[in-house]
Length: 298
Ligand SMILES: NC(=O)C1=CN([C@@H]2O[C@H](COP(=O)(O)OP(=O)(O)OC[C@H]3O[C@@H](n4cnc5c(N)ncnc54)[C@H](O)[C@@H]3O)[C@@H](O)[C@H]2O)C=CC1
Image (cartoon, rainbow, N blue to C red):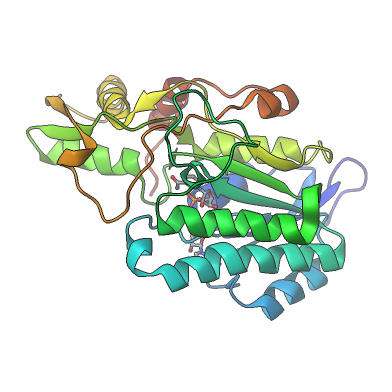
């Protein structure tokens, strides 16, 4: 495709982790002003520092977006080496390549860097204290990025991500609601469900804000437990005609659903700075309604 002069191709963006939830939403919402090269894991493994550097050197992006990550929270407990190789070392490789080529780095991170002991929203500067390997490996990745690039990089933490593409809580609950007669869901972990499409929009808008850097937070607005989220998924899916019936949903404590990784009890993130810069996000339930109104992914 021949680039048009003028408004088009103001930014050259190299996206890594292009087949993930956020990567996929970035690809399908690519603005006309962006020339995008999108690489999935099969194209480029971020554990290979030479390949990351070569990809950045050959494309010469204005901005490198690292949406690649090891995101299997429970499996990470028994695959720590792999989690660190991708989430810590891979992040460092991105930062080094961005530094060498003078590109801006946008790196994604997670609410799981926090221990969840607070009961008011976490500020971006709050101390990280991860409970599990996944959170610790992501916190180590943030630290690498900051050591290499200082405050020049944008580290955007998000949470509870879902999308029509990939595996996530919404898709799992939709399947279970269709299969089961009753669903039991944890009610004592509080956070904010976030549609990956909204994250993609925020990331694209961030291109126009080169001074929006350092650690920042982005999720949809509002607060929910996994139980609240499940109830909303059922109600919205029935309203959208995607489920033909409702089943009882019961609230259980975390202790009733043991998992290999400990999870933080409360990870609502303070988004005042990012909403002031990039514009506000919708309430999570409005975003969920919109996602469920879309045609199912083929
Ligand atoms: N999924 C969630 O609930 C949350 C995700 N995040 C963060 O948001 C970012 C995006 O997450 P999602 O899109 O949901 O994740 P995802 O798991 O859907 O996608 C991650 C992508 O990275 C790719 N990948 C894994 N190892 C790789 C490697 N060595 N080299 C290249 N690519 C590799 C995977 O193939 C996958 O396509 C990540 O940084 C994640 O830590 C933050 C909070 C919650």
